[in-house]
Length: 406
Ligand SMILES: [Zn+2]
Image 1 (cartoon, helix red, strand yellow):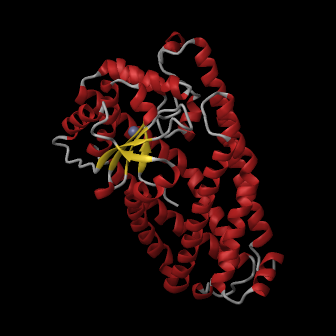
Image 2 (image 1 turned 135 degrees about the vertical axis):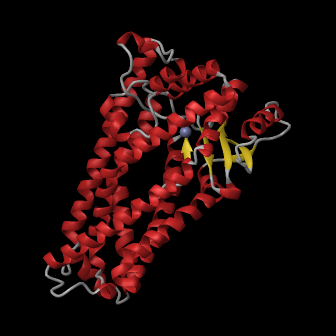
Image 3 (image 1 turned 180 degrees about the vertical axis):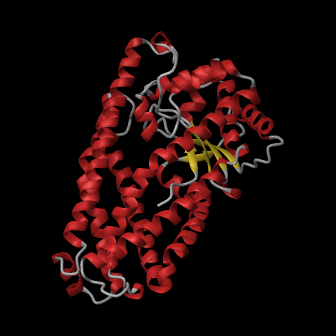
């Protein structure tokens, strides 16, 4: 599924720049740096394990289920004659199984580790509640998407991959519009920045000035209640068209100066000026077209190898048991393409950073804002180059600071 069109400012990344004595570039003390590195290492290990686990899980699903006479498929056929009912049950089982398998790691990385380093203020119950809402949403989305995908295959047959890619392209545009209005509020308390708030009038004036002449119309500036659950600060430009809004975390609004907030906001305006959201949606379109086409090739091959198809594939009766093969193909394709997507995203971040400094001329505020973000979020200012290359969507803080300095 496409990610929603919002982007978060506070990255968690880095490449080695300059010489080692630059290590205090983020303004962190040696103890703070050590702590940030320790968190970064643990998060990386958890994320690598999580990826390995996902892969093992999907491969097991293929081995155990993706055969016409697998035990589970026989049980499903006995349960109901309806293909859609069978598909619903199969999808729900795969999603639930994935939740169970990945739960211990996500408890560690999402809750235990965050508390160990005093980043989170969420109680265990709050965390579980958030997780349950996420699971519920994921279940609904997955069921709808898988059922629609199969219907497209059954109905449009050999051209299904093209129809599905066009469909997903429009879906990502619609989701981009709906996400900030319908989905974000399920997880976070968000309210319009109160004009009577002491920062309100001043911030609105700054935002008007920064958006002037850029063609960016923002539906509003919102305050997101993050402090109740985390010490981390964040900002984002979310939504598309009429729902486009700036969302600033209260942790940011309460601890950053007006100039620092202005520079962070200007970074978000930079994304708009450089058409980053539009480009990401286009990239997503090409991405899903390629992914679905690959799925078509793989599924055909799989059915030939399992002996189901002798003379050409009958799309109108594409069997349900190939679902794990489809999911594994999409998973492998996304994993392989992730570094490319991340490098594009880092390129966009650098453009937005440069725009922010040029337009505000608040170089000092930019430097202090990123140094604050690194400290508050306990981000390793210089993760390993390979880690950045593969997994980071934002440039490392040290690189962002160095860019502004020189
Ligand atoms: Zn950004």
